[in-house]
Image (tube, rainbow, N blue to C red; front, side, top):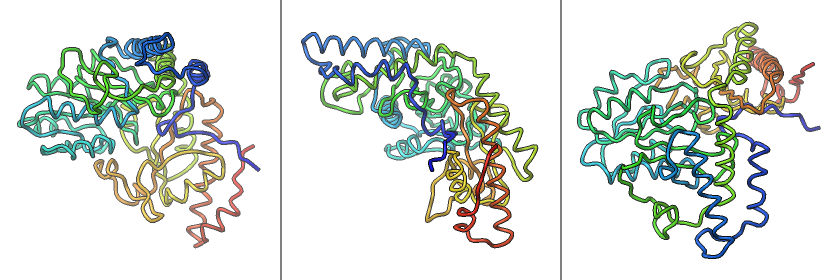
Length: 394
């Protein structure tokens, strides 16, 4: 029998909004014309791309010519960092120690030294340590919100420090988009990366904001698509979907009350009814939808399996090695010990979750943690625990 699933991995990906799917369908059914062609169908496709560009720009407070569409968030990040690498002179790349691997691996691929700015135990960037790395720096990348803990980073302060020294700044805003108000003029960054599937758009399409007037060097070379800034035939349906998702997020604007309420209900129940539960990261300066929790005495890899069978989709937010989940680089940077890191799970809500699901999910998590702890006390094999777990909600 199929178990109805409660999706609490919105930081991993989100479902398409109905209006996004409706906007995409005509281009999936009949919109096959190449946007680079000279006939009517091509002109219509180009217009659809331009309309979506304006929508994304309007959402984040940019101008349309400052938006470049990409094949996703990772490409957006790579494009930004490789363009910055050619834009700036000699000097190091400074990144926070908790950046997404797209930033870390891309920065390490450049032919310049990389310096890693540490964070406090709450996961927030240590601005004093960051400032100490700026002498000799040429480019910076600091995320808007951490994908694992949801902790918000002081991007505006970082950009102000960089501007005083003439250092180019990129921000990976992929996790923050749609969950907090992103206005690029207020942030003051030169480049900012987005990915549509993180805010109820389609997978395989992203965008890069590039401040008007800054020089840019294409990452993908070939044709003259995207005004010569990104070669390759555009994904018209995906781009249209991203534009529609951006408009949906603009309607929500800064009202994330529903996300706050669901997350807080979920956490409050677990903290009140289950001993040995702790919030990882700053409990205030974080995304309204994200709850990163440590469950004392549990292995996250085992807990995920139990919850999956009970109907909860969540994430450990770290790499799985040989069946054991190790603390991630984010947790290590925060100074979490191995046991706490291995016991941590990320639960992330979306606007498509229902308020009642927060309470229901907390009850199922409580049951799973209790069963797992009991099994470990008695030395019960995990296979037996899973077979006899019988997590229920009524």
